[in-house]
Amino acid sequence: MKVAFYTLGCKVNSYETEAIREIFIENGYEIVDFEEYSDVYIINSCMVTNIGERKSKKYIRRPLQQNKEAIIIVMGCLSQLKAEEILQIEGVKIVLGTKNRDQILTYLDEYLETRLPLNKVEILENKELYDNLFIGDFKNHQRAFLKIQDGCNNFCSYCIIPYTRGRIRSKAKNRVLQEARLLVQSGHVEIVLTGIHTGGYGQDLTNYSFADLLRDLEAVEGLKRIRISSIEITELTDEVITVIKSSQKIVNHLHIPLQSGSDRILKQMNRKYNTKEYLEIIEKLKNQIPGLAITTDIIVGFPSETEEDFQEQYQIIEQVKFQELHVFPYSKREGTVASRMPDQINGDVKRRRVNQLLDLSKQLKDNYIKTQLGTVHQVIPEQRKNGVLQGHTRDYILVRIQGDKSMIGQLIDVELTDYDGTYCYGEIQ
Image (cartoon, rainbow, N blue to C red; front, side, top):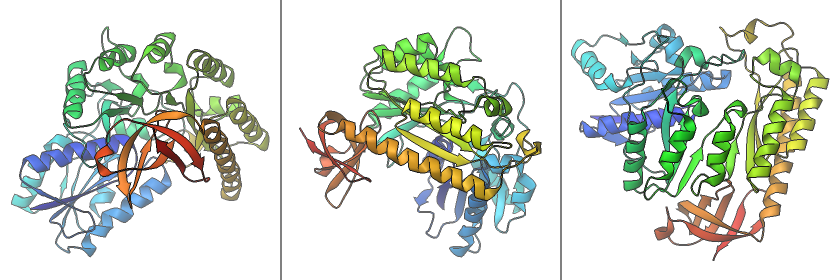
């Protein structure tokens, strides 16, 4: 039988899709493109925003265009909370949530035997065990995602994810290190550590922390780069900063969500810091790790956000000089505290503020890249199109260089020579 996959949302979903793809390959299934004819289509859904939910439902309906008799399986965050609704969509035969995905072939066999739609979504317990998903390769990618934890205990007032993913649980140290070694053996020289709350790794373990894991990964032979997908400012302890500073493999780029530059809004969001604390740690990072590039997440238009709140946010962003911003309009998620708050912000106001921050982000990115022109960086080419290699520096600048296919996946010294506002260009040294 043929099986096709489509992933929406975050790096965690990408990792989980890859793990399930390996299960199907090991059991003799042929993997085909999602736009091709297939017997089985698996959609890994997202509901972190309204857009994520809409796109998920759109792609759930798409397979019937290729095969009217297709078996559509939906898993992920959207189906965890809205299983019955998803099961009503034409063509959907099996619904999973965010647990027991390793049993997907058992569920498929059950459906093939009974031909009855299956709802296999289970409630997430407070002390949920870590899942059994595991990968040994990350096909068609040079940078491999390695999921190290799941769940979140923060319950930010705007976020639905603790309800779709449960509480923090960490992958056992030996499993993380085994997976890292297998990924290196498969040719991946850069690993991106990811999770729902990546820096929360170890909170549920005894005498083993995120800093300990970073030290152990440093010793994995053949691994050239370690990238942390995202880390909260509260998790950048002195110990973690020291490990990053002394590491030869952890890249000089961190993604540290700010979410708002207004203390009033941060409190409403139930974030665990204020702007003073955030800025103090950012300053410490920059002092101890020269050349560190920092990107961030910003939510615009949170309930009751005033123009003054927005301007405070704008000024802090300018002060920090982030390399780039990921800007999101506040998305009302049913079931969260923020969805019940008064003074929801008008859509036009949100769009205007989003556009202002996107313009600022472009300016910050342009300024940062221009400061790097004329300097030499290590680049790992990830793909080649029309004779041009494309890859990222340690500080996450996307670079295009002339070179042959044999260079893909290799560490190459590149001088950054030009920037056209979209792409940075370099010459191999």
